[in-house]
Length: 190
Image 1 (spheres, rainbow, N blue to C red):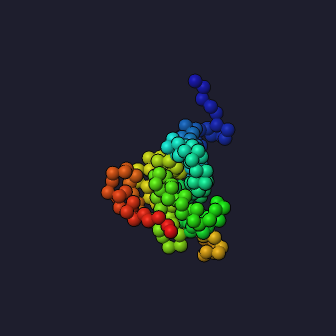
Image 2 (cartoon, rainbow, N blue to C red):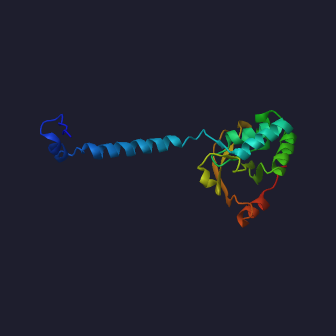
Image 3 (cartoon, rainbow, N blue to C red):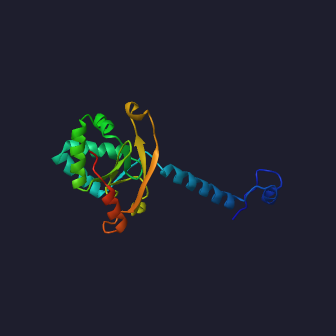
């Protein structure tokens, strides 16, 4: 195996003395840098995962209630990476082109089918999608779903804001005490 000659005078030993890394070590550093860049690129904030249960939900709602599908899709599109959003019923109704009465009926339908839960909060309701259906964080983080919600307010309600609000942390396993407590807190918006 032939030794590569250094492009500089003095050879590879002198390069190391000047602080340059040998080719093998430099290759490792380059690979680590590339992996870190790939990891950062994987944190795509505009990406949502729709799991098999979510696709079943889409098919079911498309067949039985297209308006409910429209509401579910709006929430899925605009929710934070954990599937939660804080928005007033007026703003939600305006966004999907229905009345607030229709929004309430659609929310009740989606809640009854386990597609979302609703937590009443100042300025609106926090709509939390089922993490087994739609999620944007790592799939293994669905077990503990931290609800840092994205808030959306129209100009007429509170000006244009984007605010994060920590609501609750609960385990997504249906039998857990924390889940039962959160479900008891959930009150349909009226």
